[in-house]
Amino acid sequence: MKTLEAAVSGIVKSDDEKAADEEEEKAHKATDVEHLKAAPGIPDFWAKAIKNHAMLQSTITEKDGPILDKVTKLHCA
Image 1 (cartoon, one colour):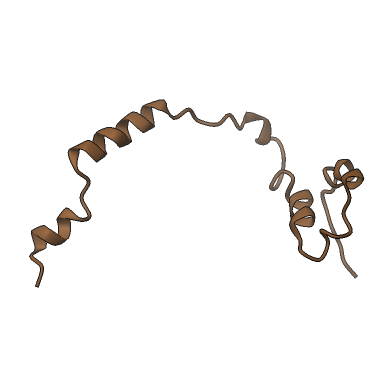
Image 2 (image 1 turned 135 degrees about the vertical axis):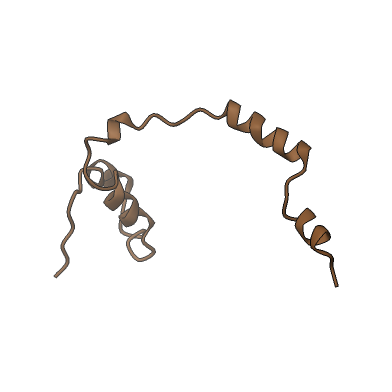
């Protein structure tokens, strides 16, 4: 049976790992999302959903790209 100390040593980060994480945090720059705050919903959601849909991929062409970027609502009957 493992001792508690042995079990915890696999979970707790070593000093080297902590230092590496701190360095990575310092180097990381936050992504600027100010331009998205005014946009409702998820930007480019429908364009990405349609382009990545398995059945629609064969019918979507490069010409459709600019139009798909304008889609904000989609209804199917």
